[in-house]
Image 1 (spheres, rainbow, N blue to C red):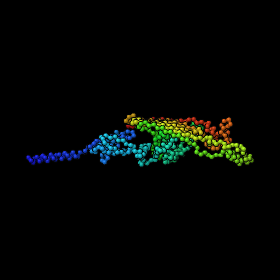
Image 2 (image 1 turned 180 degrees about the vertical axis):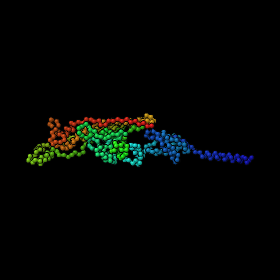
Image 3 (image 1 turned 90 degrees about the vertical axis):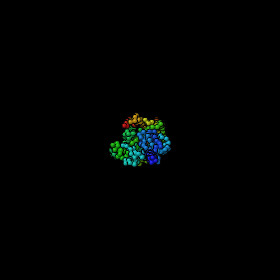
Image 4 (image 1 turned 180 degrees about the horizontal axis):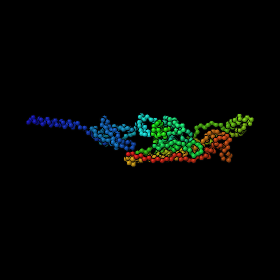
Length: 456
């Protein structure tokens, strides 16, 4: 009987030990954690984010809604390490069973990505020749689109063809490649191709204006220049001279922001060409005529008494040049929410030329609108309206100003223009030509574009 009791006791002890051993093999769960990871700026969920409990190998990945879940033996509080490409790695302390983590964009890491016409890649893996104009260069430019490229991109030669306000610049990407054809690059503005071809300003002669000057540089978000065969691969023969890809500013999912920028300046001729005054010209004219025909005497143009009464005469450069006022006004409104984003801007730019009755005036407006109409479709609108007015000087005006004799007059005693031309210059009176020849306003840029992108 005693032996049976001992067997029963030993059996009970064995069962209890086996049960305790089985319990010890099960994972201990001291806490559960639900969480969401969102973008710090847009408040949108971020899928694919890696979350790790610091000091352990326990990790989780967010789903399409940015959510993650933990069952862990760790007790609150513990530290989560949150990491994702394009965002700054963050550490977050979990004290309760739910956390919401905001990640900040890593600007430095994003700069290492290169966006090209057929996709995106890292800068170190990109073998083509593409360069992006820095934001500093864009902010420093207030005139035209092409001036943003001056000195900003290696291998791009930008030459100003004329000092006329609104006149175009000659752009060569890695030199000229055509003898009879054009050498200007192709511009692609928000996916819309635009050629840089000069247009007349409505006068019989003078420097043509540039249609690209109708684009407001303050609306530009980024400029990327494709300089090698990749431009031809994407855009065909149109990109043979290189491609300048321009992206304008878009709205963001944030509160409405209103910005107003105003700049004003003045331009003038730094140094005029030093020419003879009336007395010096008269003496030189007498000497030239005497060398041609000495028999007629030394004072064939004017006598000594007439020369003494001349004074300095007419300074034709002084009469034609002026101090030109340059002003630029920029008003922009942007904002939006998770469904709709907008960016609206208006610009007024007015540049008076250093020659009287010349100048360039631009009035432009832009609307960029993107709306998410459903979970699988969004629609966008890019609308640009621009009007430019250019007043240009007639061709050869500067040459005529320099060759006009200071002894000639601008006005007759009765107040009318002097139109005599004793020295066969280009213009009988360049000031009269400058004042009386009118240019008509020219609408150089007007287009609208509608984009609809369907995502399935």
